[in-house]
Image (cartoon, rainbow, N blue to C red):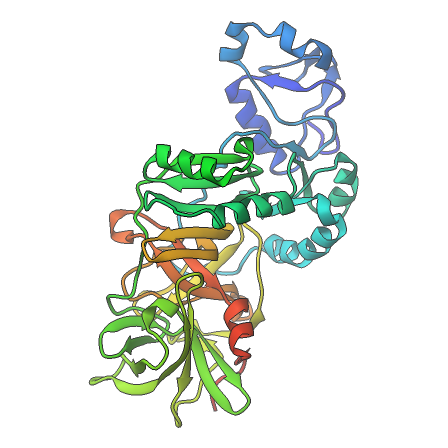
Length: 430
């Protein structure tokens, strides 16, 4: 098999075993060579001319074969309704260097997104670490490939899926059995997770959206704010009871403070340092938003300077250099004093979570566990070779990792920074 070989003409129809082999090869850039349109040198595959494809396949064929969604050009994926592969479980400790490919992907993705404009269909990092950029126009494939991305041709643009998500966001009432909804670019759809699928379907019907663009899936997860127990970047206590964590330190002129989760405490709440016994006064909540969003700004008391460093273990301190957004599939890490650094993957962006006291919008989903007391802790895109990082957001809600569930959602950091007119502290405290 040659790296520069390509499919020509008709689509492949392959057995499941051959499909897996081809996909594994394509993940590393290896494309099988066709002998001619009626046969393939790839074992377990055959060609089906487009004008005969439906007529040639019998019921037995359909049970024994499934079409590989790969055609026309090397490296092009044609997305179907096949569910995305499960994201690997989060690493128990810090990764020794985020893959260089992921850093390159984060650098080129914004330009490709802007260049596609209304044709942009989403982006993500695949299991092989490659950036995949989706477009609604096959004419963009060559340019995306030349720029270093894998191209995916999709039916719906990111903008159209975002508009559909907005329709769901504005639909009321929402039954508590409907838990989460978000745009999933890997399947070019909006996904609704519901404990009761029938109620999820009713929610979609009430929204009046294109049903073909929505997948309703069952879930057993019960998502709750995690502010009960001690754990965090630096553990803190609100009004002597609610335990959460410092997210990112910020400044506004000569004033310093930090961003944390809004559900931890309302404006005016007293915040104390839970690392001391008894807890020492740390600051006061100057502003808090929950629900709709989930963030708060705590103004620090005099004599408690903020630091741009995250982490207290020797040789594992990370200095925040700025903030941003990374694509789905990117490796990220979160920090707590109790469990140190934990790393995992971005699973979805711009998710909506439905809680009993109101929905939360624009959250990012990860496969990093969230324990009681973790609310507010920082999520960071870390460069472990330089011990620096980009702030991504603060922990909002999640499921119980002790039950084997690694799910958490964080509030992206850009909104609280803009809301309170603050900037990140990017230097160590004096």
